[in-house]
View 1 (cartoon, rainbow, N blue to C red):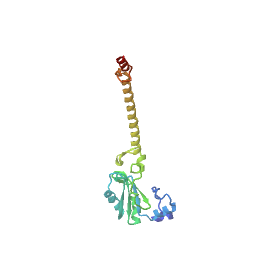
View 2: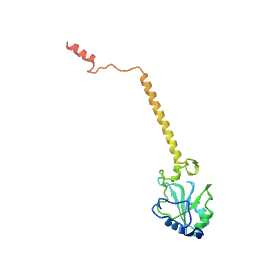
View 3: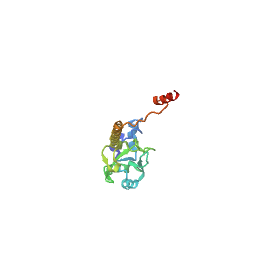
View 4: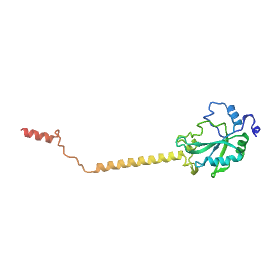
Amino acid sequence: MASLYGFRGPQSDYKDKKEWRNKSNEDYQRALAKSTTLYVGNLAFATTEEQVWELFSRCGDVRRIIMGLNSVTRTPCGFCFVEYYRRCDAEDCVKYINGTKLDDRMIRTDWDAGFKKDRELGRGKDGGQVRDEYRDDYDPGRGGYGQKRHFEDYEQKETYENRRYKKRREDSSDDYDSRPSTKRRDKSPSSSRFRDGIRSDED
């Protein structure tokens, strides 16, 4: 099957831009052509390594599975890497498992140029995947609304609370101005009455 892709290796919709930022496209395609590692996306946060192993081992002997983790909480965040012992098993996986359902979700499998340490960690600001920060729909399998929606809701709530606080301050200010004066007479030594009293005693 590898011969179908020519010398450039298989095409993949997934590419780790950070890892291959300073490397040529030829090197990247060459690494893909001999890789036995797959990137698996669109997993539910609750999907376990055992479930992934059970599904992907149907295509051949799996060498290891690396679950993607939130870099802050160290909990699964919806992706993983699956590495096979043989190239042909990985090819069968791309052919037969890509687009199937796991935990009632359509999963995506793409060729990966090879796993390296720390690539299992999410790169989003909250520790998860970046895609979940820009997602504004509701996805119960991936934590509900995306962080973009959470941020927008937070902004709206903050604006609402600021308006309420401002209104309360304005109302309390109006109430204070409308109250009768409770100013006490000045009995300090600097008051004219006190000075007059001293002056009259001296006389």
